[in-house]
Image (cartoon, rainbow, N blue to C red; front, side):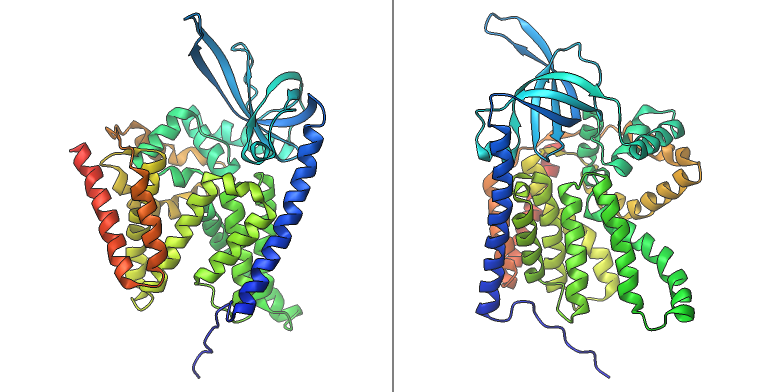
Length: 428
């Protein structure tokens, strides 16, 4: 019997109208809620704020008198969800990953600045010593497993979504594998696969014996979703992870109802829903990079769906690398001859990530430290290539046209190949 053909989500102008009406309604509610908190924050010249320190680093600037002045910059996230920057004395102790109570002067900021993240002068009142005990326990376990400080920082970034030190960020950027360290939808996909194999078969045995009337597929997905949702909340809901989780849930709901999920309509619905519920995502570069990655995966599957699964598996990593290269050069500007090897390292990471989790669980987390040290010892001889943003805009425009036209797809491929050759030429 032939399989039933799946239908598109939006099949009429009325469906499109309802979608955008729902989007505007949710966006209005979200912005109103954010505006209320903004008015509360700016009601007085200063406010007391509980916040966690996301980043802390030193800077030096030259004053008008020609003297060198050193100070520290802190990036913080408040308990109310807004992000802001402040400065502190160069002698401030290391408060990274700590919770603090502080007084901030944010009375004159705009609502747009509140959404994007703003700078405010501040005074630290006290350090809150009551940290999340579960996070502290995991961080301690990771620290005890690794003698090397760099390895500790990498695994804390992988498992706890903590920011990497600048020198490690630079090295991974030069190698083209920053996306492997920053928690994203890629990691969520790997975790979903692990949970699927851990849950499906034991649950199937229980189902056959005690509740055969239950739907195995739905129940398994429900349990996996609960684990992933708890993990996302534990990490503080990073934008890329939030996008991936919403897409995962939405994709399953649509698939379960016979609706096509490898579709730009599904991606559009996810984007509108996320922006409507979390307007701050409009100002998140990580969110748009993550979104772009999914867009190009969908674009590949739409145009090459008739290729065999093996060819799709082989070609997809090359495709995603080429399509994301202009974004990487325009935003970060780092390129080296090792950069294209990220295609191979991304494939190998699907084995490294679950294996590293397993090894940490059984007390042998340091067994893969040699691989990490090898990556850190590589001198990529990177160069700065600041790609003209006009070329990036051209890629985005061609990408949108490529949804409908093969000719635009060929021009898109020509453009990204030219940019790759341009990068290699600057190194050689």
